[in-house]
Image (cartoon, rainbow, N blue to C red; front, side):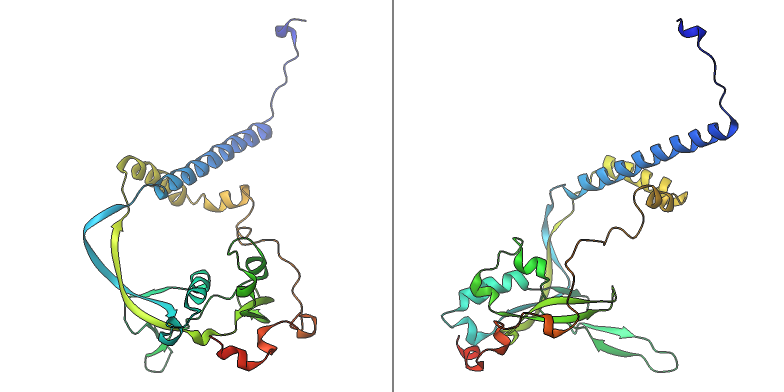
Length: 244
């Protein structure tokens, strides 16, 4: 049968409108993936070393105490610190933030800075590669997460007193390399998506807005009776804490 003898199927106005919208969604997804590709290329550009380094605020981190640094186990605690250390940057050396309360004077509140608390996935996984001796330095506890409104199991360092906070200038030695062609194309894509408010449509097409934080996690116990705290250093002899 000749192709020209096939019956002609006329498209309805509704189908034509749907096909136009479908084609537009496909082009929008391609444009979003192109934007992600350009962003990845910009992140992979090698940094440029500055001729004159400059200070940009202050940095705060944990270091070993002086007496622990002179002890035989200084190397062990330094390696453990490199896996759980946290950093903060601030424009002011005091590391205080300003709070405004209606009807009252402005006041300042010190930011909370503590060592990293490990999740069961990080504690038992291959990301940090904790040794058996390092795992014995943590105890298991349960804390309430205000962000997700749920109880979470955390591994907290038992002997946090071995580390102290230090504040030092945050020096900048490198700068991000700029590719003019890449920046121009990325800016064009950003403007087209943002100025036309296509981002909500992209969220709907590509899996929803709130799916980026969802991850698989084990069921958390609701009370301390379900936690395995028998071998925790928190409940062992307190004299062992002074063995450094």
